Amino acid sequence: MPFRLLVLLLTLAPGAASALTVLSTGKSLAIRHGWTAIRVGADPALATLVDPSGCPGAVSVRIAAYPTARNLVIGPPAVALPCEHWAPVANGWLYRDDSGSAGGTRLLRYTTRGLVLLAAAPGFALPPGPVGFVQADVTIGTTRYHVRFHDFRRNQAAAIASPRASRAAGEAERAFWQTLFGEAELADRALALLTAVADREPANGRAPFLAAMTHLYLFGEAVTAYPRATPAQSAHIDAARAHFARALPLLYQPGVGDTRAPGFASGTTYVAGVLAGDDALRAQGVAEMAAAAEINPLFNAFNPIGAVPPAVFPSDPEYAGALRLLDEYFPQAALQCAGPDGVQGEICFNDGLAPHNLEGTFLFFGDVYAKAGRVEAARNAYQTSFDVGRQSGWRAEFLAEVQQRLDDLPANVARFQDADPDNDPPMLGVANRGCAHCHFQ
Image 1 (tube, rainbow, N blue to C red):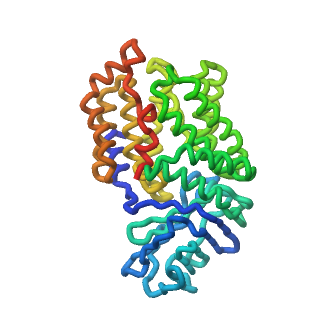
Image 2: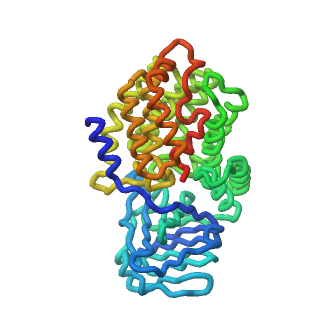
Image 3: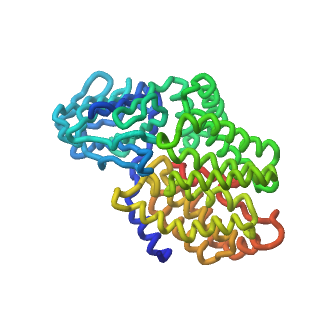
């Protein structure tokens, strides 16, 4: 597929226009006998409410799932709740429609003390489990409340249920997302909270997973070049591997759970092998990335593109393999992003927990091509990043970074290609708030 045609496919996809607010306090999920019940406690994000009674179309609801067998986010489209079913109640508002005329939504209680969402057949049904996650979005005006479930005490075709999240787990997840969204720099606090939750709640797989991701975030903030990583910086990778080792058996077993989780862990194994100069561990990482891609090609096949280029020289055969994925597999995968199962906004575009996923992805692709000496491919990727970011409200500082790369492209390519790795310009994710480019709101 020609590059510009691929870009057009991507950029025409709908984007999320509402501010994203993650709810994590006291959340629980139950799906059984055609009913889906989602509950959230008195989350700090609910301390100030948005009036849902404005008409028309002030409130919309979408519940979706990530079935293990499909590796796609599947669920009915967002549905607007009719205004006539809203009424004020103590501490907030209540929507009630026993007929479920709006996509099966029977009840939405929206108060400072919590949120309750009930949907049922006929009118609403999710695909059968097991699932990797279930999520709900309640959009009121320009605020989009998002709640997602990864830990399950039942995860079967007939029933899916999560435990009620503890106060500590909710606080830890909130600190993680405040950091990733650029609301506050709480990475150290998030890591301490997540580690404590993982220790106190041995059945909680999400806490050690997010702890691992926080270590990867801190590694990317600190390291200036992989060959010069200090022992303290490399320790973040080792710690991430340890947390992933705890999380994976809880989040994924063959045929059950989140098939993306092994992909995140596999790239970390590869980087650990590179940093340690351990060829056996590096080969293990390659094998783990390949195995992860087998169970989830759409998501996990890209792991070598993320893990390999910042870690090795462009002459390395594994760099060439990552480039082949970018050149050959990426266009094929992009076709699935807007395929017969619906637009995969959560996975491929900007509708999920990475509100600027496209911009950050193409910026990184530009770096990968630049390091390989592919000037025109790098220019196209950078320009795509800039054009999408300018339309989406990406932060000015990130737009300026992309423009600087465009301006300095020939010089940067020359620095990547010479014999001195110490003068290489940093790629996205190395000493430059890499996570921020996709996740900051």
